[in-house]
Image 1: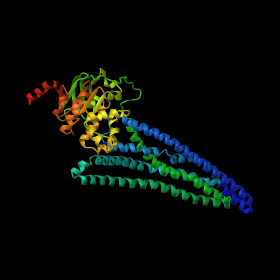
Image 2 (image 1 turned 90 degrees about the vertical axis):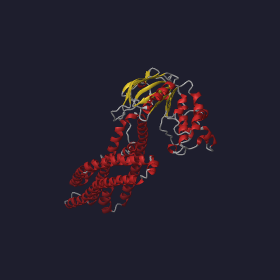
Image 3 (image 1 turned 135 degrees about the vertical axis):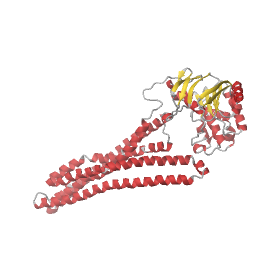
Image 4 (image 1 turned 180 degrees about the vertical axis):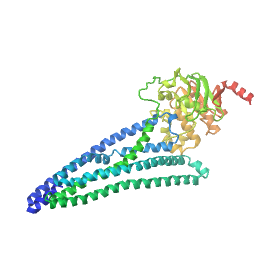
Length: 528
């Protein structure tokens, strides 16, 4: 603006071409310096943003992995969508936002320049700027409401998508594709309506700012013409004031966009903050007892447990003692509390009442990782991760040697299939083990548990997907492995009871029988 003013006021009337070239050279140097400074500013902001992004993302995922199971949100898809909203929160602090905020203080500088050149002309931007801010703020409340509704609806839609993909076999088997399609379309319709309202409000804000920016140009020209007629302003000064007014109001458009991004980021932040405030297994400042290897002696004292949101106990007043090296099976009808018992032993959930002692120490005093490192654990729900057979077997012991992987696979009975396959242990199992049969997935999960060679073996229905021949082979290979270990076996299959010496019978969350295997079986047979 100052360059243009001097050209019109000094160069053109006097035909001073030498002055023109001097001024032009100076302006080019200033532009070059401005380019370098903007590039450096963007670079340093992006580098700082990248570092903070990596740090925040890492801390967020670590927090998710440390959340207590009983505090985990019930809808996994919605929870995953909330984690994805971390990107929305992160993008608010990108270079675009920071540059806009950095430019705001320069508005005062531009106003001082306009006042120095045009005097009263400065009243135009002084009036327009607070007016645009006031109108933008007025539209923010309804915009915030729409964005929050959109966020909640988007989480539900994502939860339904994850649920549908996970249960695709069941949906097709039940011929429920039409039902799921209607639900999906209903979600899309609601989101489309919310998106339309959001766009109308955000574009309305931008249009108002643009309208006042254009109006300010006209107002500056009108006031400038009267100032020229009174001899208070030159033509070059008017042009400079017009340009400076545009520069002065330019950040207002960015501020309107920042308001919209701000509401999105606040909604994302609230969701992430709720997740970060969930109770974790290793709270800050908590010190655990260091017992890296436990001997396998387990004791349950007056154990009662209710799942979150329920008042009916899944386990009631359970008192048990399992000595180190003992082989025990826990049996009972469906819903009797067998799987709940193994979740409590793994410290996935905390007892509502009572305590669990391992090697004489309450498990709440032990680091969860060290406790689980002393238990070879196989859950009832088989879950393989996308990767190779080797990676899935060695998941709990990533530094295991090939011989250890092969030994665990041999005990589990998966070695024959793997050895005959061209890809061997590099065979890709697919997502959730989709490339393997049910029995093969179960065998890989068994191998994953056994590779840790822990003093306690805890298995929940380990052979439900195996045929009788494969199960018999597994028992033959498994028996020597557990010779000096504690075995806690949860099963419905009577054939698996050959591995144990003691039976514990659960019914409605209570221990109704406990003793030597044959005595308990005879008692149950007599009762029947």
